[in-house]
Image (cartoon, rainbow, N blue to C red):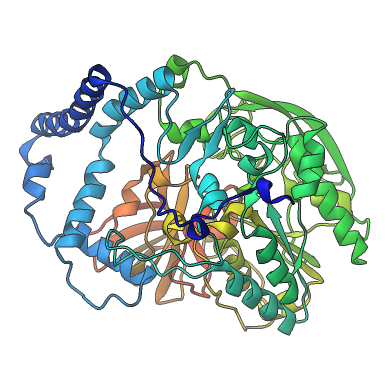
Length: 578
C-alpha cells in the first residue's frame, strides 16, 4: 500500500491531536453563543420545573442532589470503576466520584432528551453536523467517529502521551496485540487453531465520503502493515478482508450509508473469502446440513442515525433497504440454529448479527410488537453454516468483539467441548484492533479470558425455570453486579448485565443452590431500565427462567464482570423486597 494511502500517525508527526477552527465573524459567533447558552440553561430549568410537578416524596432535584454526598449512585459508580481499574484503593466515594455520578444522572434524565433532540436536529439538518459518536460525511454518508479515530489515531503500537486531563480512574487499557497472541496460544495449548478475521471499517473503504481523499483507494492506519506482520510473526493466522472488500466495491455498495455495518453484498464478499480460507485448511463441511433460502426485503434507518438522537422525519432521513436471504433448515423449516458441539466456532460482534438480530435493525416489518421478535436468520453465521454444509458454534455479542464473545466461549464451553473444535474463527471490526486508549475508553478493552477447565458438560434442563408449570421466584439479596455502560455512548441500542444474588427464600419453584447468577436488562432503546439501578446489599424478589431459553437475547451485548461458571438465569421481573 502506498504511503499516501495511510493516514499519518499524530505520534510521528508531533501532533497533539488538537484541532483549531477559525471563527466566521461576530454575527455567527453571537448566534452560536446564544444557542450554547440556551442548550445549557434550558435543561436544568426544565428539569426542576418538571420535578416540582411531582409529589414531594417522588421529587429528585439536581440542585439538592448535588449536595447529597456520598450516595448510592456514587457508590455504584466507584464499584464499577474498581472492576475496570483494580489499582483504585479507596472504598468510599470521593468528590470526583460524586460529581461524575451526578453528571451521569443528569445526562440520562428524561427531561434532557427534548432539548438535546431539538438542538441536534437543528445542527444536523442546517449545518450537517454530527455528534461525538456520529460524523456526517459527504453525499449522505455517515461514519462512526471511533472508526475514524482508529484510522487516524495513535493506534495499537505506540502509546498515547499522558495528560493531566485524563481521568486517573479510567479503566486500565492494554494494547490488543499481546491479548490476540495470548488467546491464540491458549487455543493452541488445547489443540485448536485460530483464524483472526478483522472486518475493515467503512471509512477505510469509502474515504472519499469523509473528505480525507478522493482517488477511490483504501485509507489505512499508519501502522497497519506492521501490526499484522507482528501477528504473523507470533503465529496468528489472519485473513485480511481489505482487498476483498475493495474488489467488491467495484461491483456495488458494500457498506450501508447510515449504518456502521456492511450491506448484504459486502457480507457475501467477506463470507466467500472466509469459506475459501476454511476449505483451504481442509475443513470442508460434512454436507449433513441441508438448507433453504427465502428472500425478504427489509429496511432500517441505521444505527448511526440512531446515535444522533434526532427527529428523523423532520431531518428528512429515509430507511435503507436490503434484500436478505433467510436460511432455514430443510428438515424443520426453522432458522438454522447454532450447535455448541460443532467442530467450527465463530466468535464475533454485530457484523455477524446485523441481518440476524432484529434488535439491531432489519427486523420483520409485519411484527406485531408482542413480546420479543424472533431472530431473522439471514446473518453471516447462518450463511457460513449453509456454505459449509454443517452447523457451527456461534457466539456473537453486539459491541463485544474484543472480549465479550471470547469470554462467553471460554467460560460457557467446558474444556472437552473446546478441545473438540477443529477451528475457532474470531471475526471483529478492525477498528477495535486500532483504537488507542482514549478513543477506546471503556467500550473496547482487550482482556484475558477466564477458561472453564471442567469436563463432561452436564445436560441442559429447564426444570429450575418452570417446573410443573410453576415459575421460579426467589427472594434474594444482591451480592455483586456488573457495571452498565452509558447507553448514549455505545454503538448498540440494547444491553444486558450480570448479577450474583444470595438466595434468602424460595417463593415458588425448585432451586437447590444458595446463590443465583442472573442476567438482567441494562438498557433498551438507549434508555436505562429500572433493573440497571439495583444496589448491592439490598433485597429483591426476582422471577427467573434459564437464560438458555431466551434465544432472542443471546446475541445482545452482555456486561459480565463476574465471570461465574454457574448456570445463568434471566430475570423476567425484579422488584425491591421489604
